[in-house]
Image (tube, rainbow, N blue to C red; front, side):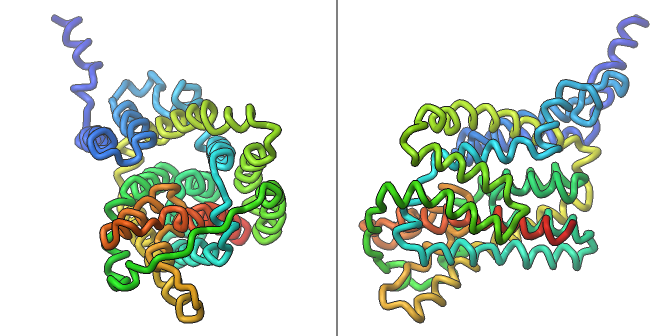
Length: 374
């Protein structure tokens, strides 16, 4: 009986806290939403399972969590903590992204830039709540709806808030189909949602090959802090568009990005140990993240309406909502909302222009914040 009693004292049932139970339930909810609602399953399934694994209580001297030096999970978390995984994700994104819709209608790039207003307004909101400037910068980037960028910047500016920022960024990316439509409909009239746009022009192969090099030089001169993220993004795109490195591009956009996504998602989820995650700061981050995402969506829509004051060929303001860099989910939401008014109005290709511009814009915003705050 003494042996059995000692054994029972080492089980998780004895040391399980309410915090652990809450985080395990959150992990289960993430998996449920991913499987039943198809909300970013490639992200929510690894994060959800990681949250469950990270909140199983173990003896303190066993050293098994991401916060225990030398543990297996700590080695997996190394890529998150030191910002290794996000550039590799950007390499894969670049290798699968077609910038031709953006090149065919360059004025739509402005919508991707306008959506970054959520980043900077949330930065000031976080300062008002008492966060340090570095912490506020890392929190603000959640508004870009770009998980890898949020992780990268948090690892440089606010490592203590890394897990909360990562979970908030990926959660709002997954909830794009729920968060964005009400804002889009509130800020537009039915007549505006019915606007049809001309098909984009065909972009030459030469333009596609010149663009990644030229865009990298211009954007990193503006924000040198974004050189790693944008360097990998445009390198991946060059592999795709050069037509002589298809094997490398194929690896980057399939096997490599899949492996990194698994490791990144699981490690982020495993870092949500209740004692480190369930804090007042985390709740404030989630609130600020939601506000940032809403402002970014509204900023893109309202700027499209402003541009229409000066354009003869009108932009459907719904397209502005795709300025956040949740690729391609926000572009799909634009298509969905547009077709609710007119089933024959195809906005997806137009929405991809500010959508991919938002990826670049969020990286530039992160580079600006990193440069200004260090």
